[in-house]
Image (cartoon, rainbow, N blue to C red; front, side, top):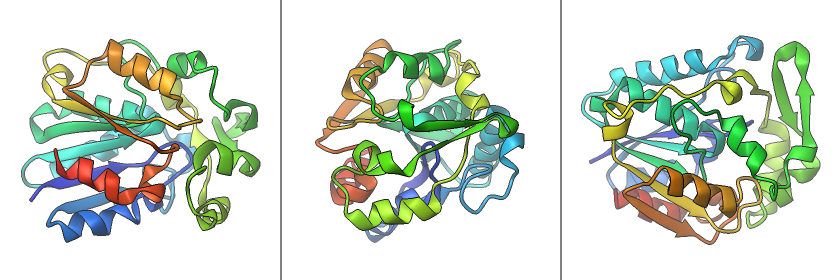
Length: 237
């Protein structure tokens, strides 16, 4: 049995994984889907959420679990699993980046997002300066996030998606070869992704090589559109 900690991406919450968790459990594994601070059922005021508070919450969860875990990060929050691995390398069996930002030491998620000029989301992001956060306009949900998902996912997202803190995306990662560098990592690319495009995914896993790269012919959200195929890859770890 393996223990998976599943980390959602921008604007989302533990809800992302509602199809994946029971499939992993059916195969005898333990799966924990997390609401990051300020997201989903976590009521931390969004203006108080930082990279540090988010990684601290992950590390507390990791410390509470006996044995090693596999940490799965989606989209922007690949940065969170990387930083957590720096602080808890001996507790993490493997890092799995799902269409996720795989950023080297000293760089920020925003630096790589700016390079991703083919993505469709940026014109639909609304900044809320008073909250140091942003939201995504619902009219782009289907095309940008859920192109190959059932329509009810888009409708649910209109009720569930929330603010995303800005600070973590502009905070440079602090990674070392001695800690982060010794944790095995794999990448799952989504070849039809219009949010984190195949161009930037490939750039990242080329610059920061992974032990293995898997491909899914999916949009940005294979946990909704092809959970069985995603779980097959996860169970192979």
